[in-house]
Image: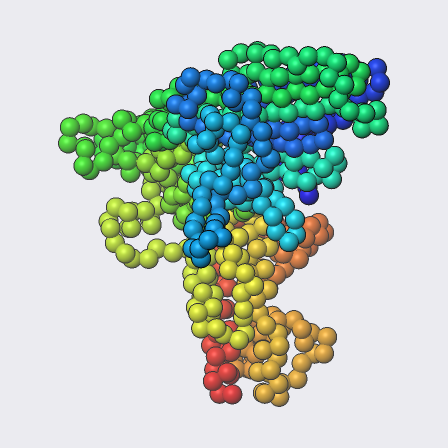
Length: 572
């Protein structure tokens, strides 16, 4: 199976491969000292990724969770008697031979050490028809809200930035040396150990030999008991030039980088935070600009404002529209509509666009972002140029339900009606297509091109030539053979057939959408594209104005199409 795509886990895999390789003759006796293997444990316990389970040709590590109380006093001799195979089950049915009763039996596992009588493993082996696999202690999965991701070969969750975090990474049955390794992200593991007042006990066994030269244990040297620290001790026997074994215990406690109180505060969401400052429109204090922190004590609301003169939480901050480009370009992580932005599993809030095409966000919504995310927004923060948006004024401050829409939103409304009515002349390919089309707000030609490309895919790409052609066939309207598959040509022919003036009806807006996609968005780069851009610059103040003008005209054409197709369908 492929290894996890988690860098730290892959580094452990590479280090494990080295430990499982028999070295050249000149380094063989040194290898028997297990120096590299013991260094692996020393280094691993100090890293952000901890090996909890590992099995290879010369590497064997098992781990149990045990209460701190069960280690007081610490019985080292007892722990060194730990002798078991990797755990495979925690529950089962049992019955006797002298009666027909069947009972539920839990904790079907023996560690071989009295200290571990109440211990439990974090990793299990499970068997199925397709082979064995590693399973994780269910309580740990639930506490961390992690789920198996087959592509990442890990149990993952979304972090505060909306990125996938590998909490438990698994490589099982790797073809090279048939090794298995399960590693845990240290921070959530430390939280779990701290709250449960537990520690990890790692049993390790490094049996080192070369199969072709190993003729059995000579036991020519005595077994040494080595205690490096109260939490790291082992037995070792070396048959000079032949083989060796090193078997011992390592106690892993929560990382000392964080105190118990800091870990509890982090779990409660009370960790010390940093807050950025933004230029806002302080409408509470004489309608003036002010620099305001997102810290809770720097702003107020209607319930707490009587004893202070702080700016309200609804003080708007304004941003250059380029702030949204990052979210438009990563659709797998961000969902962006004309008034709402959401980061996968992390945060979401509303925004508005004012007359100056600035992005308007309330300071309260910025407060909920991480400091890193706030810093990103701060780069685009600017003074207000056109006041608050009309939609914000009507809906947020006047409290009216009156709809304030953009031409693109009106277009979406028509298409949504068609979806709800299940019309035959147009079908949506993917509901997510709505989230891919946005009014371009910057002077970026790339953003403008992308908007038209996605608009063409959504609108023009949804028309069904077969359905429209059937209507024309019923009307006995002749078609140009080479153009029977062109939806816009078919629609224009249909509209012309029902036009009272008898003139040919051209869908100019839909033609523009299609033309921009074919002549510019596909990087034609010819004179036609250059002429089109010059015409747009002459007729419209901005690229956004042009886009909205085309959408406004397209809405009228969609209604004409709806009327023509519906009346023909009803008459049929």
